Length: 132
Image 1 (cartoon, rainbow, N blue to C red):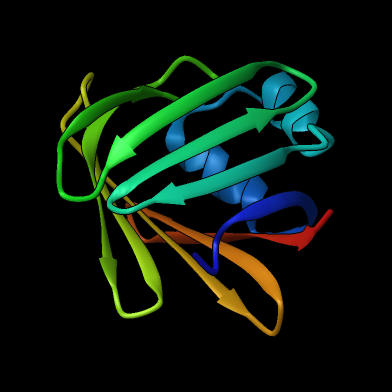
Image 2: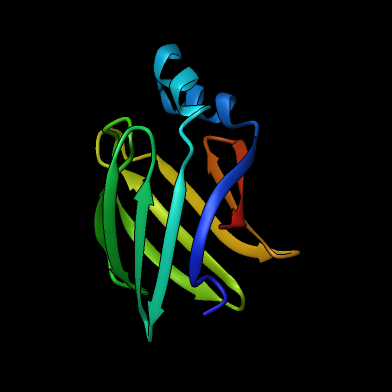
């Protein structure tokens, strides 16, 4: 339940390098740096609903902990994987459908902020959100 709420991206760390490693072209990377991403997260038991609102798109993703699902990133990259809850961390383990490479994500609350960490091919990035 700690994840419940409205979150707005405050800052990013190494996000451009991460997107570059993912194969996102420079134009999309520059736009993504100013995407004004907002997340609305609600949890009911093992089911999470995440509404993403940004300059590029508005989508709603519903997933159940431990159950595989498909997801498309804003640049169109298709992923398949699961989220699990380990202690106070949401752990996302995904594989790209185009090349089978892993994208791992962790969401955790640190000092009242939602910190989302991404790791792809050895490149780590963070996006830090404040409650809206």
